[in-house]
Image 1 (cartoon, rainbow, N blue to C red):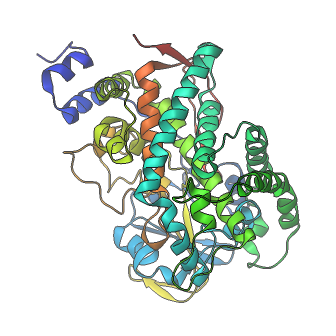
Image 2 (image 1 turned 120 degrees about the horizontal axis):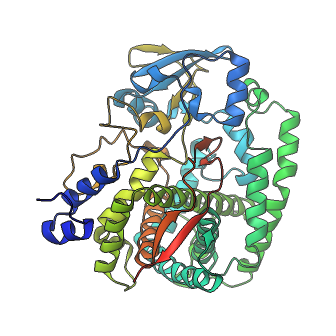
Length: 477
């Protein structure tokens, strides 16, 4: 009886969102294309070259089935861990025994300094205590209001500019940056938008790609690339300094008007407030991570739905049912389960942080294997999210995995935000923002691909598209 019915008719008949979504997923039968994994271990020079171009295919087929993969890497041992017990050991139970790698620090420090992402030990614990109030429920509701308002403005801009072939990647990057600027600074980013985006794009293209010396040299040992990276990040840091100076000229308010007010007045028991340099590093971290990764999550969500029209129709129907009132953060996540499930599935298939690498600071034992100090411990969400022991049909687009009523996802199988004490503090911000933008956009437009050529993901620092495809936005009635 269900055969031949439209998704909208099924939605009316069934009143069961999970069943409706499963039917839509089956109708779309979407398996997004990905780079083909290597057939076996790569020689070291080829591996180093491939890591600069695209790290995603460097894991061979067995990695997607095994619990742990051990291989040599520049005189050390590298372990890829897929089993929950091993991930828990490294990232949760014994996290103090593992630190950021010198390569991570060399690549990211010029852009974000010693902020929350790169800080270690007591410095990290102090920063976490001081930053935590900026991510309290009140701040989430501020984000929801800002996201709602800025998305409506962006939609109006799309209509004024015409709806031919639309650069959705550029659109969501500008929108996410505006949301970040309004949430952090209570000000528009129009005057600084091009400088911020150009600084990020130039650094990502020229300096964020890892080289052999990044992996080989210990932390603190100078390399020519270090100087070049610092020089390459100067434009971005100067732009950031101008933004901070403009906002700092406005006295703090009580209650805080934005996250900048929260951060500059942050102090705890025995914790001194941030210095100007420390505050700049926190802002750099939040502005960069807070808009770039969310924009990529949105792009991949739109990209998937453009090739899954039945699922897209359900997101649109859900958005129509919810209506246009400005929601709280809790209402965003509770009232839009299909849109939220799509975002989570996009994060599974295209995790912005596709690999989490730690270096062992002392000897340990993980899953019965001796881990010497200096060994590299890798938890790769790109592999983990496609692991055949952990997921049914892991290559398929199926947001039903994340719907209420579906079997619960193992907490160590889905790690787009990491896990343990270093879990991303902005995870809920990202989910609220991406879910609300997706819902609002699909309430107004149907998203279609302009061409059907595959768009492959590339992994360097984040997972981004190998080309920037155009999409057609068709207004809904």
